[in-house]
Image (tube, rainbow, N blue to C red; front, side, top):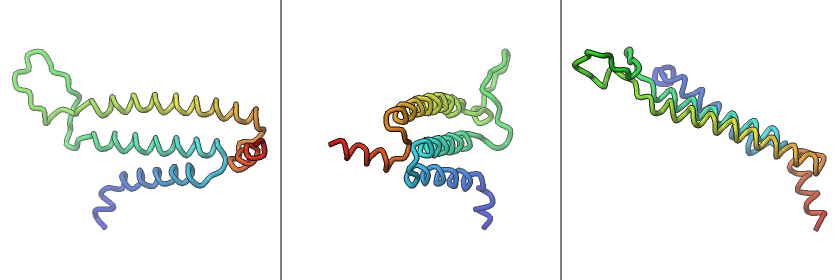
Length: 125
């Protein structure tokens, strides 16, 4: 039980991932699927950022002039945070393009329900 309480943030990320995954798989509305994808991606980003943090007072990796001894254990690795900033940009742009495609689908088929769109496409054959 202590392990679950000590790592509560990971359990929150897992719950967010499962909510997003459920929305992508189970929902039939395209916008709900997109929001589920966004929740899933956000949970992954939060997970990676939380795994990159250090406990015990780690600081940013800036070396001051005149500093002779450098201990890497005292500094936080900035690479995971920078990669997650890139992932956020990709997530936002993917969401924007997907919403634009959803608008185009709605204009063409007058619905955003996956089943109705598939039925319209089957009837056109």
